[in-house]
Length: 162
View 1 (cartoon, rainbow, N blue to C red):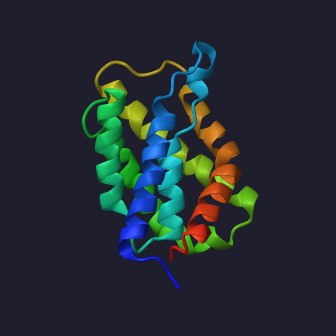
View 2: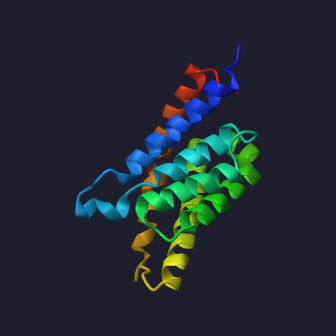
View 3: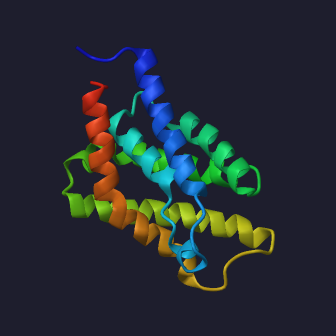
């Protein structure tokens, strides 16, 4: 038996809320540059697991919320998350059959794309990073992908979400 639409919406929304909370948890200064992109990771998982329910519109809404949380230019994260969701939706069938390390590589590329779009927008407003350290969250996100995958997969199985 599968979960109803209300349960699916609640579980997915709760996972995005938890990811947003992780995104704003204060970290020490030396750890700020390596903060994983929790919202993007969660969006990637749900886009791969439930492509018929989580997609570009969800990414746009999440992006605007992340923009408000982080104080970024309105639409910066919405655009970059929508691009990431679109790319994930285009290759979700392949991603499902990739090995875990191949998935980590794809996650690195997609989160790196998210970071590059963010840097592009920040460059337009004159506040971009001067080095490639801005890609460090892509690396930390790729390294945390197996954990995120297992946690969200177990949540999905517990609530029988299909």
